[in-house]
Image (cartoon, rainbow, N blue to C red):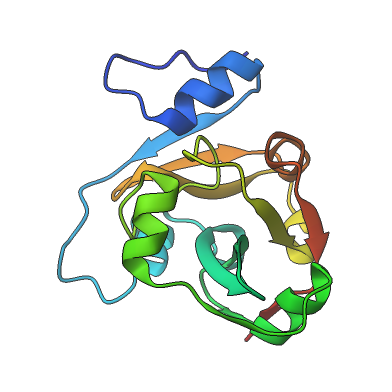
Length: 163
């Protein structure tokens, strides 16, 4: 059963609850000095970095695309462009990413964004029963099945991450 969102819920938890999707919430005290939001989450939550995913926005031929990759890896921009039928990709400007999604960098969730964007999840996610993504703010992650994540984002799985 989906965990009920509290009044302090985020658009991501509201979307999950509305969809009736099972998920878990994992809050922790975010350290502003942490060099990597995602690696901090994995460490604090005691999870393998391969199972915790970061949400990135890229500009693919003039279109913003959401890329979800393991926090231990990097986004392969060329592979992302290829996955969505594009030619060239570059990381989106952080201010554009925040304005478009409604979330702050370091807390961008692939769920509950202001605008529906094409989404690509690294194919390694399907190796896990549960993956962890940002819940919509720094220091707040959500655990859910990769199948549910793909269904709720109308996403596709592709090889888009590199070590």
